[in-house]
Amino acid sequence: MDAMNRYYLALQGQFEKIRQTQWEKIDQAAQWLGESLSNDGWLYAFGTGHSHLLAEEIFYRAGNPARATPILDPALMLHENAIEATYKEREEGYGKQLLALYPIKRGDVLIVASNSGRNAVPIEIALEGRERGLRVISISNLAQSTAWPSRHSSGKRLFEVADLSIDNCGVNGDSCIEVAGLPGKIGPTTTSTGALIVNAIIVQGLEYALQKGRVPEIYISSNTNGDDHNDRLLQKYKSQIRHL
Image (cartoon, rainbow, N blue to C red; front, top):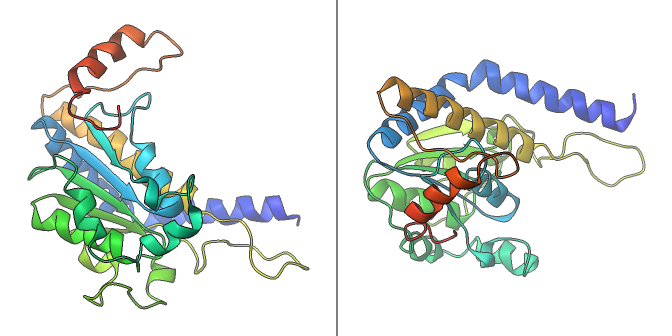
């Protein structure tokens, strides 16, 4: 079987494993989100390296909550200095400084994504979020996270410090298929599985907010008829969301 079909089957298998083993946790996260949104709370999300894509996934997107803010820092992303970002995410103390830039409050929901779950900054973000009364949900790859030691002084990994830990059901090293002639595996999966988890939390959370009698504010595609609708939300929240 060729590489792309083996990759498809591997990814499909991880999706199904998430459905079979993590769905109750995803539902719990959605209940927390529905409760937060129904009480004028916020959804925050954070990740370093490629995991920052899951933070951006929640933000300013058709069908997603207007009260959703990514925690983004160029020093921890890949578009300016990818090599430096690898070392920055290991720097203890930086996560606390970063979280202080956002107007988080008790009862908000925070998703922290880290495939390895071993670097200091995501762990610190989760610890500080819990200390400040947020409900913290981690998304990590337990096969990898349990195979390697923490880089945080607590000795704990991300899944050990969150209120709720969700496994993306990936494999150690993320990439999942072997091709003869290459020195390592190819086909990373955790962006796809992470997006499934994040969006499942969001869609179910929005439905739970409705069930609580609150119609949550969402964006509509600006490439359909959403401009006027979205403009009202943007004017309302521009002063509260640093990335708008």
